[in-house]
Image (cartoon, rainbow, N blue to C red; front, side):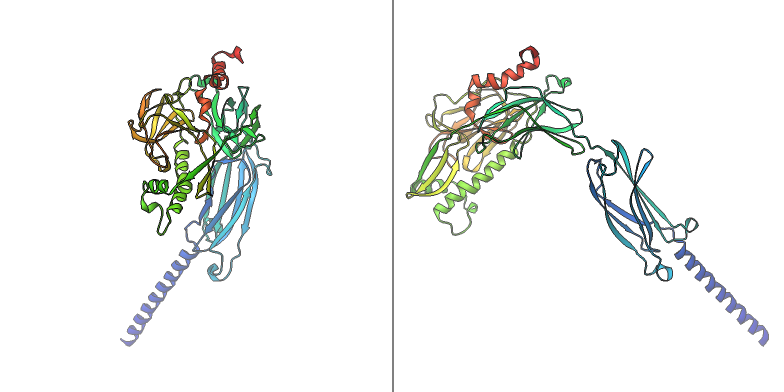
Length: 461
């Protein structure tokens, strides 16, 4: 009986030992032959490859660790090696091996002599698992790109581009089919062009541009185009810049005027412990800049359709009180306290005189605008806008289509006005220009209409 018990005990021990060995083998098998693929993250993921792009690859394998990383570019059967990295096996089960790794690399299509067309960026990452005959788990990533290193083309289709400092210009041009953005560059300002809707098959674009009042006669102007791969083209076109002298103007500020003007603005604009003159300067400088920023933003999404027709009309029976580009110096108690530039024309008639739309357009703004008080802004299409400020009332709504001569409201002295008048501004893609040009039928005929007519009558070129 005792011998039977001993045999039974040894049998149980043998079973337990076998079970432990089996569990150990399973555990070792699961570690060594683990089937989890490495992980990776690549950035950026560009659609196009036009110049050298710096990529960052982050790879990880938290189990058996990273074995190697290989990066290539494959294009039409040609293989361009980019990166190869092997990692050592260190310690039992690679416990001291590399689990995470980050590497930067550059793919430059010009240095690699790649051709135009599709290219595949391929990333292979292996770990130290014994899967796949000992080769390890494989992560394969592929990112498709279009190699495009050829910039778009752009050609002027009009001539006679004469423009004054502070004035407007128009050019017709034809960009290549791969162009995504185009227009005229004036220093660092881009004036975007729009396709001519009358005949889109011609591929012609139209661009209204401006020469800001602080420009010089040697300011460079370029036709500019960019394709989807961010290749850019700058091309000189024929133009002539006329110089312009602007008036000097003196504005004398009284205590009575200060109190009257400052009281029109809310106290939270100024902050605590500001004197009346400090409050006025905040209005005249900071608030003016903020209001002009609002106007620039308003004028960045023009209607592609031409809404206007013929010269803009000037406010009826109104005297000119201030002109575009006036160089103003503000005096308080015989001391110059500020300087600025007047970016419109001030027109005055009888108090609360009716204000007409200068031309056909759509209302895109009709509310208070800081220093300009109650203000209406019209979009006339293709980048042309007009602004009507210091109104005593507004008779139109945003989104409303207004015909030339329709009533917009009445003159007033809201905002920073010194008396009842209309502040009229003309903007080209958000840049203030001299409105006098757009009131002049001869200027419009010579600089605008004649170019547009050549589209329908090529013999007039």
